[in-house]
Length: 312
Image 1 (cartoon, rainbow, N blue to C red):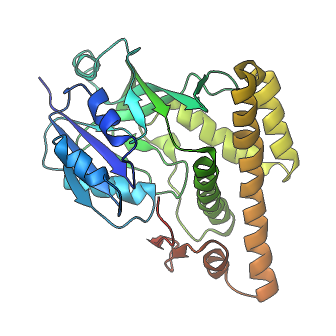
Image 2: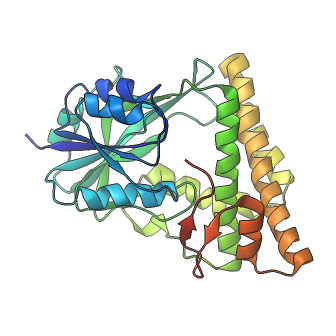
C-alpha cells in the first residue's frame, strides 16, 4: 500500500486540529503540522495525536507549504494538503487509499471536491460547488505556486479526479472571518499590483499540472474580471454569483456569504489597490514601499515575500 503523508498548516487552531486529524481515520502514514507561532493548545493537541510538529515563521501560505514539502522530501508515497479547519467528509465515495490505488498510472496529482460551510450551513450555489482542488500528489512531483493569494498546488505531470470530499467547516466567529478576509484582501492586492507593475514574477498555472477548474477561474479572473473597471466589476460579479448562479437559493446564510465574499471582499481588494497606488503617487515613493506602508507587508527588491506584520 502506498504511504500518504498529510500536511497541515496551523496558527492557533486548537478548536479544529483534533477534528481534522481524526477525520483522516488513520489512513496516513504520517501527519506533519507546520505551526507559525501558536500560543494556544494547538501544538500539544497535535503531538498528543501522534503528529510531528515543525515550527516556521509565517510569510504567506505558499512559502509555508513549500517549506513543508521540502521537509518531507525524503518520504516515499503521496502528500496530502488539508487545512486545519477542514475534514475528510463522510460523503466521500472513496477513501484516500482507494483514490490513489485506482488513479491512472500517469497521474501525478488527484483532485478532491471541496465544500464550504458558512454560519453553520453548507453553501451549495453561486458557483461555489462543485469545487475541484488538487490536494493529493506524488511526493517530489508537486509544489505550491508562489503567490500571495489564490495559490494552487501544481504537479509535473497530469491530474485526475477522485471521489474524495473535503469540507471546510470553520468554527470561529464572523468577526474572525472578516479579519481574515481583510488580510486576504491585502495579499490579493499585492498580486494585482505585481501584474500591473511587474515587480514580482507570478507563475502561470496554464502550463502546469493543476486543476482545470483552477486554470479556467484564473484565466477569467485575470483576463476578464481584472480588465473591467473598478466598481462595475464588483457589481457584475455579485450579480453573476447571487442571481445568475442562484446564490439566493442558499437562504439567509447564503445572502450573508455571497454579499461578504463576492461584494464586500472584492470591493475591499479594489479599495486597497486604490489606496496603495494613491499613497505611492502622493508620497512619491516606490510601489513596494507604498505596499509596506499601507499593509505592513514587506517585500524584497524582487517582490518576493520577506516578512509579515501579522499571522496567518
